[in-house]
Length: 333
Image (tube, rainbow, N blue to C red; front, top):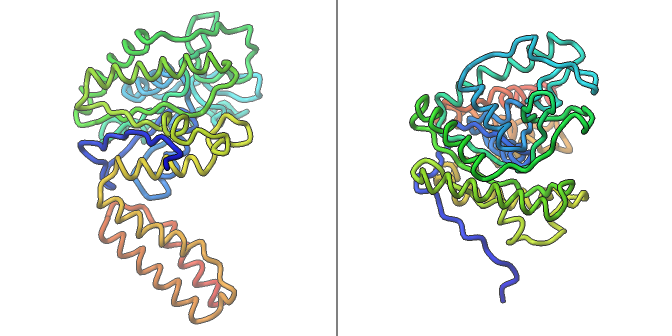
């Protein structure tokens, strides 16, 4: 007896190796998946502009990275939330000090631009086709920053408008970095403020956009059905958080497991299995931290980390090594 409808996932023809370099951009669901990649020590940059939901703002951010153009002070705006920021960046970059805000914004640009120019995979999670345009100049904003709604015109983008934007963007990207492949997903987060019908129209628009892009460039663009997994395969409110809009941790865990299974290679699976053991060991808190048994436990974990670093030289594990040394010092008094 079957109680769910499994999502048909086509494994990638070229799996993502653990040595791949990734740039992850898009909605808060991208943040969740990016955090899992970071935890498992992938070389990944996640949302250098902060969370972005609509495809035009995501495209603008990527275009800015391709240009390599840093922000100037005159591009910052002082918003009602009490901080300086841009119309494109998430509020986490807002700061009462204009110079500090500018430094924080530009601080992520170089790393992200380098990843886009030299990386292997761009992962784009689209959240909504609804956008807010400033009445003053018609620009689409990535974040309203608590500016009154009367200052914007709200509209739903068309499939054609988004596809045209991304055809131009991807052509620019591949001229800079011919080896970059693009993995698209649609966020399963429900934008309830758009209304249930409006949310469905929005998600359908994004799905049609991605389908068209993947149809045009199948050798470089692929789709991972995170949206279908949550909406159809899990299809139950117990897989949502209390707001009934965001997937629960259990749902995110499930999507992550399927992503690993179908999109990453066997060597990555083996590494992540070993690294998971290291993570569990680092989280362990003993009843007798001063015992020789615990000292040996920490030393063995340190040896495992060192061995993995020797096998995978690109790993950034200095924090974990430092933690092991700190634990040893504390336990030795």
